[in-house]
Amino acid sequence: MNFRNTLYNLRNNFIRAMQGRYIMYGFDSLSRFLFTGIVILMFANFIIRSSIVDVLELILFLYAYFRLFSKNISKRYRENELFVSYKQRLLPGIDKSKRQISQAMHYHIYKCPDCGQKIRIPRGKGKIMVRCPRCRHEFRKFS
Ligand SMILES: [Zn+2]
Image (tube, helix red, strand yellow):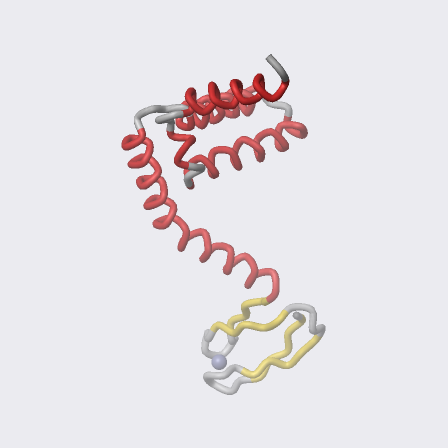
């Protein structure tokens, strides 16, 4: 048996073993999420070095592994669909808080001392005069 035959046999055995398993249908969103989570936990644990994170990483890994080699394709498929629908429901909230954080980084919110109108002022301009857009009251602020 030469090298090429050995390789051919190994490849055939591998393909036969993979037949009908979920991994043959590619990486779905849930798999990508799980493996991203594992990588993040791995790097985080270089710094934190917590055994709880170790266990969490192991659980994620076992679950991801179990999913990839599962033969219950339809169940794995439904799992992924459920995950995607949850993700889509959560995403607007995540986007919104991201926007709020970036706003807070770039702007000060002041209240007009006269009428209470909220006014958004860019940060880092030094001492400025602010004119309230509602009542035209002017006041000095440090941004
Ligand atoms: Zn005002």
